[in-house]
Length: 183
Image: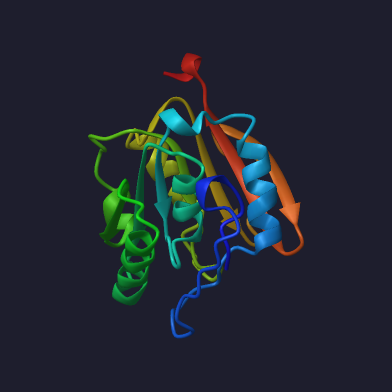
């Protein structure tokens, strides 16, 4: 695993092999961040990384200059690894939370984010609930983006706020946008 861009570009990270994760491939992550570069002002972006796993996406956001990033994962070993990696890289603006994502999203949010990324397990049967919970409980700021990584068998094209779908090998991203006029 490596950081693709920003202040920690090319830094190699070596998470433990025993983490129950399926990290986003470097190719897909690079493509994702190439798209986001056109939409996101990293310096003024508060971001939320759900089902964070190794923290690869959260660490990439910090490296690119995101002002605040919260990484959420239920697995204690994943949370400990992300905390260690962020300390090793001196990424002080990364907050790591151990929580069930569905419990977190089921309550109205007092904090809003400019960018939310979710990479749930591919065998999760509640994929379609994630965007609904994010939008119904006001987790996004106006003009905010939500991106979810998913298997090809999941289709979000008829979901509210859906913007586009991109495929990179076996990795699929669906993008949702909450425009200022949607508020």
